[in-house]
Amino acid sequence: MKTNKKILRLPILAAIITIMVVSCGSMPNTKIYSLDIHYDVTKNELKPDIPIVIVIDSPRYLSQPFVAVRSNPYTLTILKYSKWQSPPATMVAEELKKALYSIGFFKDIRISIVAARQNSYSLKANLTRFEQFDEGGTAYGILSLDTDLLSPDGENLYHNAYAKRIALAGSDEYTALAEGLSAALKEVMDEIRAATAKAIIEKESKK
Image 1 (cartoon, one colour):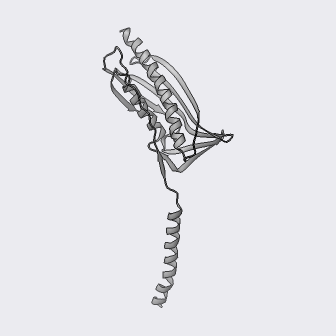
Image 2: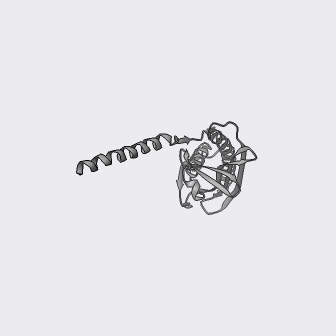
Image 3: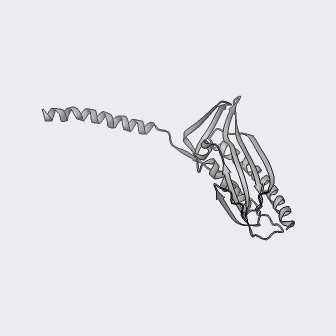
């Protein structure tokens, strides 16, 4: 009887293995997308000895690496097999760091969850949208970002709200989205660089 049970188990085991192989073979490949942004280093009258802390906030889904697609104002789809190289909130924080370094007068730039105001400037950023929006047969890259620059003594030197909507060309999965959001983020970072440099130069000149 023991031999018969073993014989009966073999077809069942073979079936399970076959199902697993077929399932694994039909799973789509995971694709990972990156941003590509470069900044020109600028020269300013201030010495490179100013510290600043970047603090970024975002909805929970933007702290995860998955690509997000909105098909209408009420529905957001988080894609399982299409991911960013890092969560959007992390990528934006790193781009802010690169953009601020390119100004030329920051010696220490840190990314933190809490703004440290003592002897340091703080750039608070709230990332609210970083996604694809499909509307009327056209795909758009959507970027929304608010920023506040605080001085070491707690003064709010500026508040800016940025909203970018870029039509996407091409159909190679979400490569067009990565290209579109790279372009949108570059525009925003250039504006933040200019506003930050202007505000800090004016603040430091009053000392």
